[in-house]
Length: 164
Image (cartoon, rainbow, N blue to C red; front, top):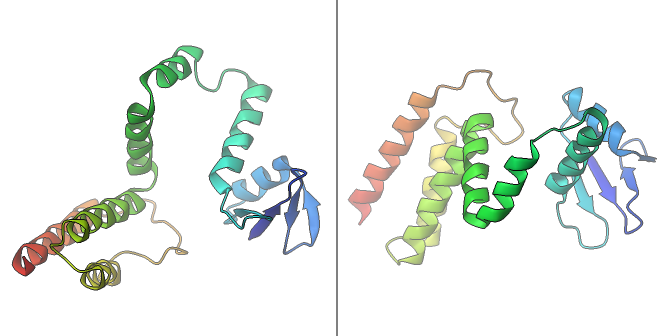
């Protein structure tokens, strides 16, 4: 479902053709709906920002969502620690997405170093997805088979080594 956010901060549900609140977006997500929030003016995907706003609303409603000391330390530590935390959360909550991000990052590095063309990297990535990764709109498996995914990454790494 696409939701547009206007410059006046109003959210517009494009399917229901009406304005909605952040709490209604939260209810949609709790019901299992796939929600994407797009800035009306720029077209930029601002789903993560909107979800964070929902979490901040929860913080106000129920109290301390994350202890102040944790938030303070994250700010003091800076970007690298926040990126590490992001990667760990992604690995815990979306192992398939984390694996795809890591594969994409490694292939991009090879392209940047000139060891692989962009076309070959794209083909290798698609081959990996076709041999076991679900499509982006598929329901996540409750217990994904991480060993199978790791096997596929190793196979792609071996194929990369042969291409060098």
